[in-house]
Image (cartoon, rainbow, N blue to C red; front, side, top):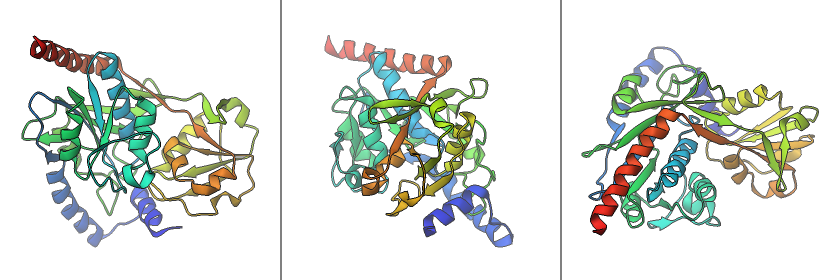
Length: 329
């Protein structure tokens, strides 16, 4: 297991305890509380929907950002999504296209542009300020992925994405005792709304819907997989969320190959004897050349927003449309 994967798992499971760990967590908390609100200059007239996560990976913030961008576009806003190009080197402010190199734009920006299509630009840059300035060329509203709140002008809407079952992580603690991104009180103070993401309508503000996994252009339903020997390839901050979701569909992987959050997955991962490999869309990007020799099905993942969140986004889109009409007169 790679060192980064070992550290990530230790944070998720809250293995580190003791006086030194608690003291370190207090220092982390003081620093992290100051980073919840980012100082970013916003061009005049541009509205921002900021989407941050409650833990260090695995909350579903990027799928939420994509769903918000799609909803705003459907409501008539000119919208762009600004990614953070984690583990990538964009080199310049650029609009992402579907066949861009992974190491230049990052996995989440690639997924966003493939999912949103050509009508919603996805922009990355060496800094978020540069990316926002570039996005403002096409947009009245920017969805900012990975930042909860901005200053000096606050976001039009600041959304905190959390897991519906474990909103503050399994350990409910700051690193190195857990994987909370910042103290809960700082996160809540910066957010306009907490969006719980899960598969149960009773628990979630944004509900995950999945009918199966895509393989060679066809959807393999969950019912067809229950009798097969399944392997899971995972490069996520919290893979237990994927395992929990699979269990709801009656799938228990015989083997799990795990890489660090945002990859890469070590070569040779597909040596286990399985009938079918599963991966999320993001993880599939990191499967590498081995994926050509293995049957890797991509798990379908659709996020349905609550009516309350749709109404908030509708108000932002309506205001942006009115401003555009006024400026055109």
